[in-house]
Length: 149
Image (cartoon, rainbow, N blue to C red; front, side, top):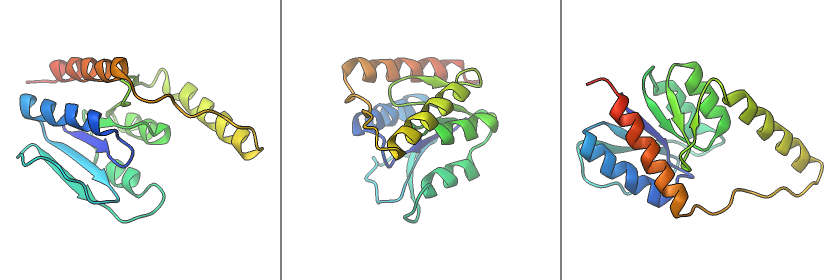
């Protein structure tokens, strides 16, 4: 198992939780972004910088992910893609995407996008708070505890 992070929009506090988990669990964690990232010196944490452009980081993660890996992303289409490849997807608020809930999330995303295209103002997500961080850390710990030894 490896952890892949859609790092362009991933909050710093979530990255810090991931850095600690990578060291504690000794699991390879790769952050993928289209800008340079400062990551801690660790044999378990690395960053890959991809070119600029729409979905370039997502496409790189999709290309590299393997069954059993974990992808941290808030991007619903990326989550759907990696689930289809046998990987797991966890958003920065601690929600585990699954084959059971991803279609609903895609449908809601598409509906909101269509509403925005017609001029309807939709609200974005609320700022990440302490309960979101805790929910993410707890979900990550549960997933790491389940991984094969």
